[in-house]
Amino acid sequence: MSAHMNLTLKVWRQKNDKSKGQFVTIQANDIADDMSFLEMLDIVNDDLTRKGEDPIYFDHDCREGICGMCSLVINGRPHGPKYGITTCQLHMRSFHDGQTIVIEPWRAAAFPVLKDLAVDRTAFDRIQQAGGYVNVNTGGVQDANNILIPKRIADEAFESATCIGCGACVAACKNASAMLFVSAKISQFALLPQGQTERYERAQAMVDQMDAEGFGNCTNTGACEAECPKGIKLTNIARMNREYLTAKFFREEDIHN
Amino acid sequence: MSSKSKPVLSSSIGKKLIMSLTGLFLCTFLVIHLIGNLQLFKCDDGYAFNNYAYFMTHFTPIKVVSYLLYASIIIHAVYAIVLSMNNKKARPVGYKQYNGQANSKWNSRNMGILGTIILVFLATHLQNFWWKYHNDQVPYVEYHKDLSTGTVTTHELQAADFTEYSVITENGVEITRARDLYKQVDFAFQNICLVALYVIAMAALAFHLIHGFGSAFQTLGFNHKKYVPIIRFLGIWIFGIVIPVAFALMPLYFYFIK
Image (cartoon, rainbow over all chains, first blue to last red; front, top):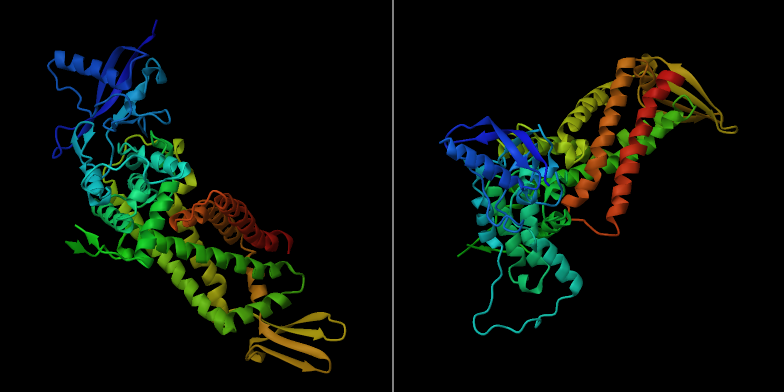
């Protein structure tokens, strides 16, 4: 038997990217505590739709914490009050009956609000396109494990690669800095032999793009690491700084675009 | 097509590098400044301290470093303003609710406020001592050191009798004439408001460095499993506690004990 609760939601409503938004108070009644946060919003939206109102627009896709689509700043924290999970993995048992929940979109100049709680995160795509890839040979596929990689290095690269690009790091950062995301993407290739070809070019190109998108500057508060649903570490940012500064001072390279 | 990447100093990481390097340079200065100023605690009427003050203001390599120091303070502050303005621009619409303490330390989020307190303190501090020392607004003193016994006696010196710092030996007595910065320190720290400002500023410095020292190494890309704990230890215990507390003891010593 699950307990049921009534909640007061203060939700950011914004018609489109041009209009001014505002907080709207919406009642969410009879919410089961084993629902996920997004299922709760589904129920609320059903209600709104039945009443002929515009449902709350929010991003979501896989609903199992791997796609990086869901966002939402819940009571002042990206992905809600728990650590190491995305909004879709957050259960209503983390809240209590009668609670007021403030739901806001990611806030950053580089993430403009599209509608209600959904923001445009294509800035991340453009950073990836600037250098977050490796060149591969054409022709037959190489046998697996042809290139030897120590387990330790493979694990570290894998940990960086678990970044799902949700943008919680930007949302949590008081400076709206994207350095945790960018550093994870730089690290996963910098660590591996396959990533060496474009290693220094990549660091420069991705940092340039990050700056061009208008993200803030990291002040090492560690908020990103604490709020990251995938546990991406600050060591990635140190590595990015190292890669970038090495490129600049010891290996100045052209970047291809 | 190939092109050049943006110049390093126009990038976010380049600007952070400037903050890091100037910040660490200022940290090394703190160590030297503290060691020298510990002579204020000597009960010799400022004999050692006033000689030290003369040395620090007239030894050429030290003078060169001091200009680097003034430049570092200005650059650190200017870049802090530039970066903060960029950061403000990066989030034009703020959160209605922002739970910062759930994911980060208070001091790491308020380095600008702490830095501003330190900057105000620095202006006052330089005006009190640096400016007065360089513009002949401090008293003068004459020390007689008996070279056979080593005892030092202090004599007041009128402004009319003072021309330049000098050390003369006459009949086994070393006579030192100097600007009495020690007396100026003693005089300044009889003002409770100034003592309070100094203590508050040192508290701000402590919190600034507890975050700043380690943060500077992170910006440089230094992140090593074995050595980062050492840096964290130095940042908290030496730069965050020992140095600010020792500095704060100076005004307290003159106000309450001297």
